[in-house]
Image 1 (tube, rainbow, N blue to C red):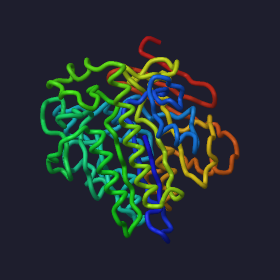
Image 2: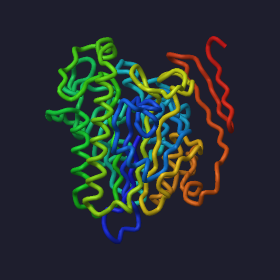
Image 3: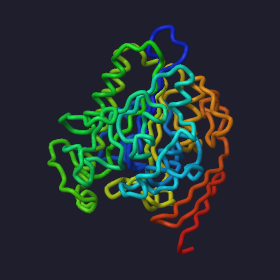
Image 4: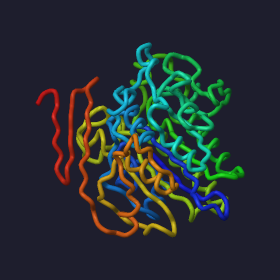
Length: 381
């Protein structure tokens, strides 16, 4: 996940916000986290110029509940869609999604004077009443499901999957590049108001396709069986290059010092990911399934080259963005995360946290981390 907060025009009191999330990225998939097989110069640059977190967590080991947590700032089990692990393209799941009954992050930002845009993955509902435009986003360009073919832009069933405000988007190119191009266009345009951009990359989620590869045949099984470590590396590297273009666009507008960038992933890695020695992977509550890379970058404000072992979780990014934007949470829906900026900026030291996780559909596991201890209960004891 990458989050970017920037003041888009001179004299603006409130920063603009760009949020970028990687999909299924392993804890050690980046060079700045010790990977020696994948080149990620742009994310490495952010880590050198900002704060790298060594104990950052996703709210769940799979995408839909983590995205629900980010959009609401609350544990995913508090709402129905957050209990889908993940939301599937089947009839029963088509009737579930994020609703206006739960006040969302972009809706709160709009009340604080922001325009809002989602580019990339949604995966919080397939029907319009559960979509981005019904939940606080002024614009949407991307896909509604859990995965999309990087070449054909279809879903696993062969249906057209790329949309521009719910209209089919007829565009050619590699998905990672298309999403980055849309983000660059938005950043480079004139803005009367501060904006919130949520840029949700599909990379490096399956189907495992590098630039120049062919489209996959239909079917989940085929999509999950392909790929290789080499293809996976190219996917991560292309995402890093895309993030570099986003950063460059911010700098060309003269907004770098008014830009906060937060990078992380929606959950741990999968088949070809590097977990850095952490046990297990996506769908599991072991560390490999929920610990994720996270970088916070704000040149001129945060101390460069800092390595933080402060535990943070998905909902903290929500609370932090709201605080930086001067937006107030809805008192009827208190946040489960905290604004981490005061801790980071004043160097007041590490604060002990208590985190909870649960999965019950494909796995039966529960976990709690309190301080330096973690308890994990599985179906096998």
